[in-house]
Length: 210
Picture 1 (tube, helix red, strand yellow):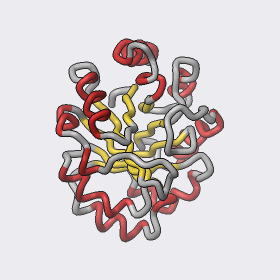
Picture 2: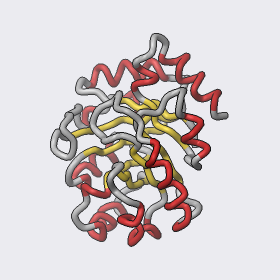
Picture 3: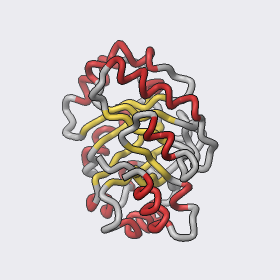
Picture 4: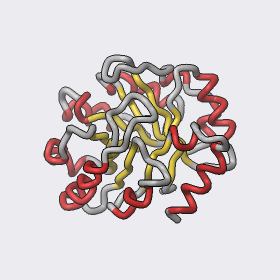
């Protein structure tokens, strides 16, 4: 798994397209955030509007939405490699598993800063990847919450081989802490795309954790 994954959060699908074109040949993976304006206050374009250029990457679709199962078919259609949904957005996890068994993409669960690993523990045998949110989700540029890194050790105590990502507020000042805590990958948005040279910034962050 690539250690630094550029994260794209846009209302306008053309802005998403521009960022994907910028990253072609530079990054193997991208994360595309989808927000519904309900589960989080922000709203992006829909899954169905993810540009065709995403197929040139391994794409993680991060569903910051209520009723994530309603988005699975669209994720399948756009060729998502992995789909992440939030545990706190799921009403009945057993029903969600039935829907996921019909999908070919890999999937994982995200935990907001206020959601504990123990809330996930009843389902841990079914879960192969976890995205630890180090900010409240919905907007890029929020401040990193270092206390959430302790969740990585907690979840590995339950299931050591789980793939763990960290998402939110990751930058050159804290990225080493993320990997020292045991993360497999970090999703980075504003630190990359808010810089003067996004490609160079991505490459520098990647070189820090190689």
